[in-house]
Image (cartoon, rainbow, N blue to C red; front, side):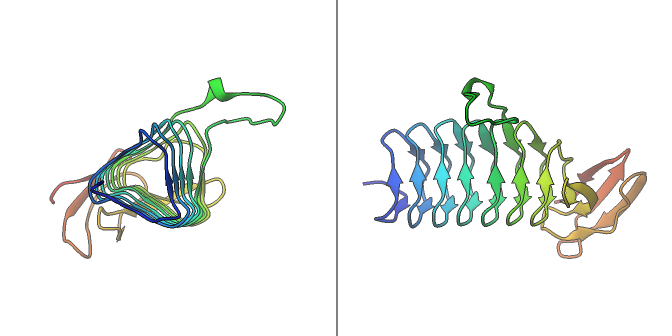
Length: 194
C-alpha cells in the first residue's frame, strides 16, 4: 500500500518514485523514471516525463505537461495550462531528443497560468512569472516577470507580495504581509530576515 493518493483514473508507471502525502488526481500520467518528493499535488490531466525531478510540496495545476529535462525544486507552483518545452528548435521531421536543454525552476518560484518556460533557462528562487508570460532567458531570484517575451517589472517576496523596490540600484523594502526585510544591491534581491 502506497503512502500517497492516486485517483483511479490516473496512471502511475512502475518504478516512479513518489513521496509520502502526494496527491495524484484525475487522468494524470506519471512516467516510470520520474522522481517526485513528498506532499506534492498534481491536478487533472497532468503528465510527468521520465527524466523529471520534482521536489517537496510542489503544486502542479490542471493541464500541465512536465517533459524530460525539467527539474522543479521544493515549493514550486505551476499554474493551470502553463507550458514547458525541452527542444529549442523543434521540427516534426528532425529528431532532436539528444538535444534536450535542461530547465531548472528553483525553490519557491511561481509559474503563472498559461505561461511558457522555454527550455534551457533557470528560474531563480521565489521568482514570480505572470500569467501568459514567455520566459526565454534566465530569471533572477525574487524577480516579477510579465509579457512576451517576459521582462522584469518588479520584485516579489517569498510570501508572494510585491515589494516596493526599484529594478536596479540599492534599496530596502519589507514584505507587507510578513515584515521580512529585502535588500536590493547591484541588481540582486535577497531576503535578510525570515
